Image (cartoon, rainbow, N blue to C red; front, side):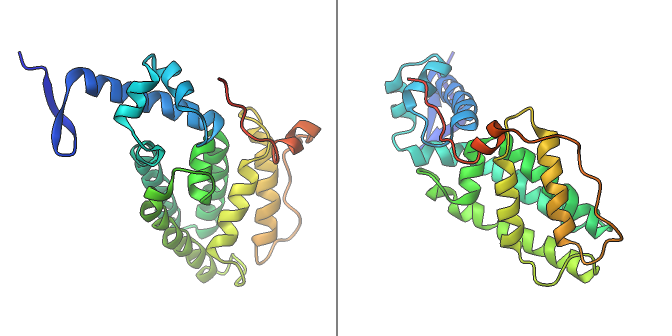
Length: 221
């Protein structure tokens, strides 16, 4: 029986089965580590989570950008698809609101994705072309809401991106209600008209929530 699998290849050559297994383990581990710690997490930590030697990680992905590209292309596709879905919602305000809520939670759950989308950190430059597809998708969402007369005319797609990125940094994974509170505050500021302030989630912020805006990922060595 052949020890080579044609399913994936590097440089046009098929990977051996054990090499492909290691590649999958490394990608799964990197997804976990980057989500928790950001793009600067060490390859030694990725190797530990994958259960392989750090040399194996470097052989499969000699440059950090190679790993980031392999990992985040599909994630960026999902963000673009979500923006396009929101822009196609017949209820323009619902589409915008749901995208802000979803985007804040997606970035709160994955520090690596948040860094890629914000062009911060090392190693993501090779997905710049993929990331750049997001801006016109969000612009279409903004213009859809403006044509419907529900979003103020002086708002652009970068305003939406910055708002989502800021809210996504608030609190930890268990603070979704607090982030929903800030999304609603932002939406009230974006609306053309509202009869009264929208009700907010009754979740008090803590000093720890504020600290999340400034703390750096803690690497485990």
